[in-house]
Image (cartoon, rainbow, N blue to C red; front, side, top):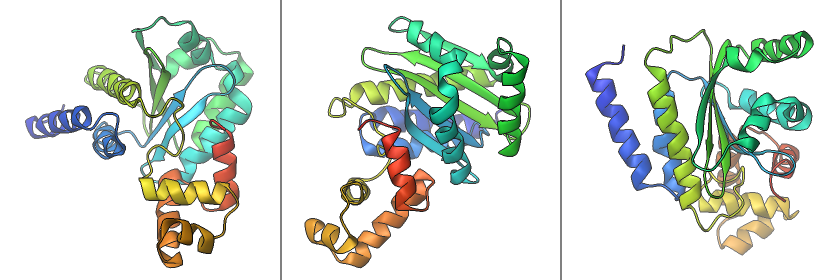
Length: 243
C-alpha cells in the first residue's frame, strides 16, 4: 500500500509534469514518477503510418537492456503486435489499459513463447501498457517489472502517466514529429545531430563554440540517456525513428 508520504511525493511530481509539459524539463519529474511505480523500465512508442517511433526508452537498472528490446521490437515484432492494431483503431480522446496477460492471450503459442523468452532474457516478469490517443499522437506507454505485480493500486497512476505523456507531446507544438532524442538537453541534441551529419568532435565544437572536451562530455551524457555506447548505435536508433 502506498504511504501518505509517497502519495504526497507523487502528487508533487504530477504537478511538476503539468508545469513543465511541452518542454525538455518535463522528463525529469516524469521518469521519477515512473520510478515510484516500481517499474524497472519504460518505453514510449508513437504510432502512425510505417514503423513506430521510440520516444523514451529507459531501464532504471540497465538502459542498454531497454534499448535492445526497443530495437528488436521495431525491427521484427511490431507488425504482429495486437496493441499496434488497437492503438491505430482507437478514436481521439480514448484510453485503454492492458496487462501482460491481455497482451499474451490473443497470440499463437509460438509468439507467446518468443515474447516470454525475450522478457526473461531481460529479467522482466510482467508488463502494463496504457494506450492513449490525442489530436496529433497515438502513444503506447509500456511499463516493465522484474516481478509479478499486485495491481490493486496501480491502474489510476498508470492512467495518469499515460495522459501526462500525451499532454506533453500534444503541448509541444514545436515538435511535429517526436524523436528518440527528445529527452536530451538542447546541447546534447546538437552534439547528436552533428554526429548524425558525419561531423567530427572538433567540427561540432567549432559549431557550438565550445571546447572539444565539452562535446565529448555532452556526447557521453546523451549516450547514457539513450542507452547506447557508440555512434553506430545512434544511427541505428535514430533511423528507426523519424528521418
